[in-house]
Length: 103
Picture (tube, rainbow, N blue to C red):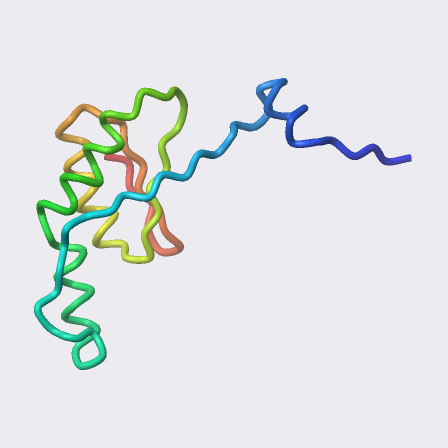
């Protein structure tokens, strides 16, 4: 006989953590239309230092406890963010389907 377990019970017991999604809005603006040069636009987006600092500092200034998870579909973006967070003293694990890197 199987028994179903509610998420609330798992969180209460410490078996899983409650996810909290925090969207970070930035002032980044492209000077051209992505339709015409998507690759260039994505590169500018992930390499924008001010934007990456804002994202990383959101993690640094988070007062919660537990694991912080940053998601991006660009490995290069995760590595740039990992460098910033490493400089701030965070233990970093960057991973994708092709890469696992402990910084």
